[in-house]
Image (cartoon, rainbow, N blue to C red; front, side, top):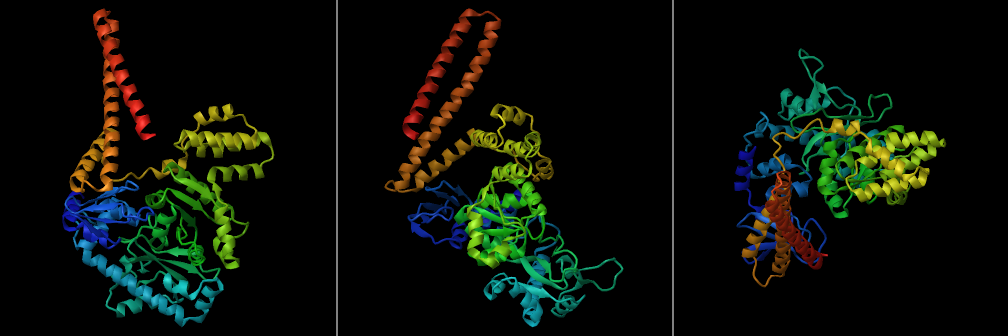
Length: 535
């Protein structure tokens, strides 16, 4: 994969790439723009063609073509590599065995199927009436390309065969299937369902989710099977349309179904995404975290919805995200609220509370017995608190629990020490990223950043206001490195002092003691400088 990355980096020019996302202005030998990662009135986002990197002097975002695509598209490095390789027309060496041409054919088949389903919705009044009865407007139907698969076993297959596709391609695209290898004719996967196309980050259709119209038509939602283009554990419905709004508003709203998602966008809440009728996974939340670390869970107000919210809370907190829960009226889902009154849906979102507080209040409402409530807190609430990395945040929630339950804080802290990691987190961590590289140390990251600053200082005009910003950051980083060097030296001296004391070498002890005092003095000086300059 590293060879692929180098090839892509050589072929994709950062100026051409970023110019497709944001408006660039020439600034000497560089370019500048208003940062796409935070709101600003003046251009503080700089691009260096010579080094093929960017840096924002406002929010600190920096990187190359890969990090930019990761940030903008909400994908990981592998996803960014695929997007950039596709842009450059490069066949990746370590890609799955399906060739670029084969994948293009699958995309074409899925696009043709989308058009076919869209045409069906217009041709079948009953299906169109059902969509209208759910409150979905004609504009939303077009925007989300909603369609209909008629209740026929091979209508889509016949249409696509007539367009020049073959059965092997249709099966690989997840459009048809066989019950047995010996079956002569594959049949359509989707029949008698409202069809919602699922797209990748660039907006290409990669799969479908079908919503049953008839109550006895099998599962409520039926998704395409996993294919070379689609993995349901990673794809979120509507993310291609919501990603910019999630980044802009700095939070995402998670809903369960396609109807909820479409109506939420229609009601003016465009930062919502859906799980396509499947459980939210760690991969889903990791994608959202790249856009924003804040989420609101807005699941159905029933037992299944609450259970899904609990699991998603565990996964979100384990990733260091801020997780809130929207309290929907009993028996209602987001689609119901929007259909009744869009402002009610917005009000529910505004009143969402931190997930730990939500589940704590739920427990108190359901269990009046103080002793049993204590057991519930120990079993269900404290494990959520244990997932929070910030000591200040943990302290806040321990105080909140004590206030609402009358359990003493010291008792809660004692129990918190014995909390085990949730099984949901353990399960989520089973699949580790392949070819994972060791993370650089803090010292290595500072040294790398200093090199980056020095390179920018050489490129920017001396009169540029960013030069002052860089000089201040450079001084702070150099002081941090000096402080870390003192810490390393101090650790070494203390070890030597321990050995000298055990050997009763008085002169050596005196010398080392003096050196330790000198290092302490230097560290104090650096700390005082930091407080004066940077606080």
